[in-house]
Image (cartoon, rainbow, N blue to C red; front, side, top):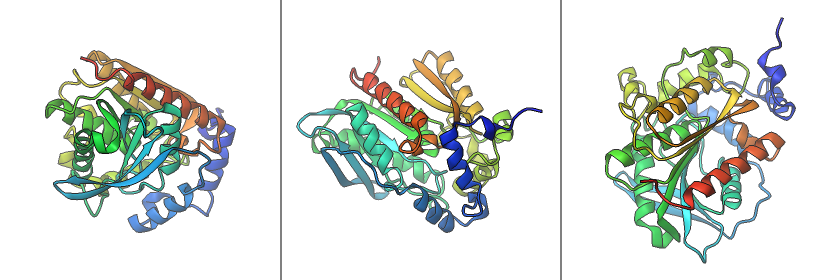
Length: 319
């Protein structure tokens, strides 16, 4: 008899799983969106022991109205590269506050500016509201380089989970709509497709923080019309042609229901000639980077992801 996946998870992450699998925590799919947001807020709003020269709340002007963003700038005296970042949460949960510690650390360790985007959430604003906001924020950032103190020639996008979905979809829109040119995409355990029957979804879709039933719940809130889930703006793996997309770094977790779709996207990018690094982190679970202050494994991988961002954004877009 083989050990369960939980037995092979990093010991410090197992402590997280012990909490989320206790009666004190309810799987998201069993809650209303409002109750799930309250629960995740309690879980991720923790103090952060990182200092940064500038953290500034801003409002991006978009066709849909003002969009709250937060700028993390390690050195306001310099024009730095910029990573436009989209938080996770299944398009239903998350905010600037929950991703604040990770954004601070990513900016400090990469030496790049980070613009965290508070896109509209489902079910109040279903697809395509979130991806519309994601692309609009990118456009605004490129046009507001002087105000942000960034170099418009060195911009990338990134995100975790549903935010990784938005980052991947945004690169497709930027390519197909004539810009802005992007130097990099950072995809952290991204949602890449709406197929919930891949092997990893069944093997790891229970009691490993993200449940398969959670993904059903998220997709039903974000994109209730199943016919729209084949749109590459919702499921980037469905893009007809991946050629011409920016270089990618995928950080995946060994025990994540989303592992197989992440691997499929990495293969799709590589086959299309996109410079791609795919890192499957052993003993990790979905969402693990969010626990970087509690877990040495997560702390190391956050540093590695920051180094990738710094390396790619230092040179600008690839022709």
